[in-house]
Length: 525
Ligand code: ME8
Image 1 (cartoon, rainbow, N blue to C red):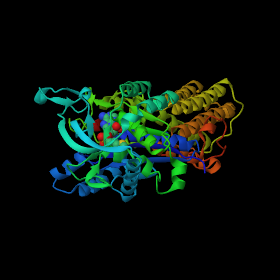
Image 2 (image 1 turned 180 degrees about the vertical axis):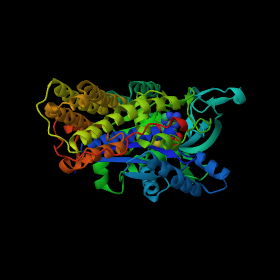
Image 3 (image 1 turned 180 degrees about the horizontal axis):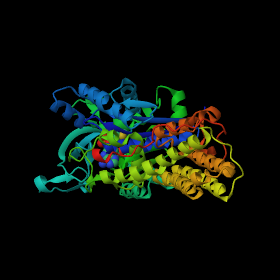
């Protein structure tokens, strides 16, 4: 059976509801998954929730419910619904409290224990509950404001806790050299380059053994040989990528799915994915993922957006006004993937208006309107092509090839910019060819037919190339072009063929449906 293209998001903590930072990672992963499906590849896309650990436990306690009740509530009322809000097409959703995960985590850790990879020791040091991370002194900074004079976590700006616990440790120090060798042999494993450099710098200092159990609370997966300990939440969580893929349970599925092709993560959790996770897999003798891509942070007012700093924005605050397609398009287009990016309402409104309503939406509606007006809604057969049509066809072919190559570089912003060259070229073509003027001359019927057919062809290519980013609008567009009858479902159109000119069938029923991106009501904003 051929290997599926397997992509993952992080599994998110259920201590709070999702904000647009979480949705950003999921949308980017979803876009890559959908693009590969559009290439007609077999794809498997996983997301889910991380439910153990102190952070979730403390939140549940503060709300007077058990952690399981809290997790159930948040998953059903917040985390699963947000996937609908942003149109995620995940194939599976894993929760770390599910038996299919817990049992396999216990088997994995037992296997490492039996192989002598785990020993008992004492952890003396700092812990950040917000990160769920054992912190080295170099990870801490002097606090400011109410925390002045204390050491705080450099990510959360909150005080860390001092721990002194007898725990089980994973012999991670033994993997320093093997990891460095692996990074050397697989230069594309950690991306972008800045993330790779950070990981190399960190591992070159030499790795320490990692505490992988806790004994001061019991919300977690019990250590199989010592029930007074629960497994450290990150050790448990990272394994989701393998347990959901059938590790230890479904060899056929595991064979088809593992290793993951790309783990998408925010840069805050890079080390876990690019250092600890491969070391765990090496210790167990399992294949390593092919790529970890760490994207940047969404900033609001110049700071990492977060609920705790009250800058968190829920995805539906944006989709209620702009819709899910515009949400997806905006975040993927406006931020160079891998860099930090600032969110502002003005920016999204400006791009919506210029690029979606006036750019793409207007192109689609005027072409359909003219086919309706001049040819009674039946797509006309084109006459001989001139240089102008050839040039437009060439832009379509280049846009498709460039976008496809950008997806392989995990650069959605570049893929969309490439596709947009076709939106701009098609709008420019119509402005220059002036079909409304050509229509006045009965002797130029064939020329008019050629112009409208070429414009519709550009829209056909756009429907295919934009389907992974704006599935609702492209479904409408496919419908409006009457394309399904001759060409079949939009999902079945291969990316490789998108730029091939002349696919729409003359006579197809073209209809002007609802606007793809209605203009915003200025009174409402
Ligand atoms: O770390 N900008 O879960 P988490 C961009 N459970 N992305 C952001 C963001 C922001 N301001 N805020 C959050 C965990 N994210 C662990 C993961 S995986 C085995 C376990 C995104 O709920 C980004 O992808 O804290 C970040 O890495 C992730 O949410 C953290 O989610």
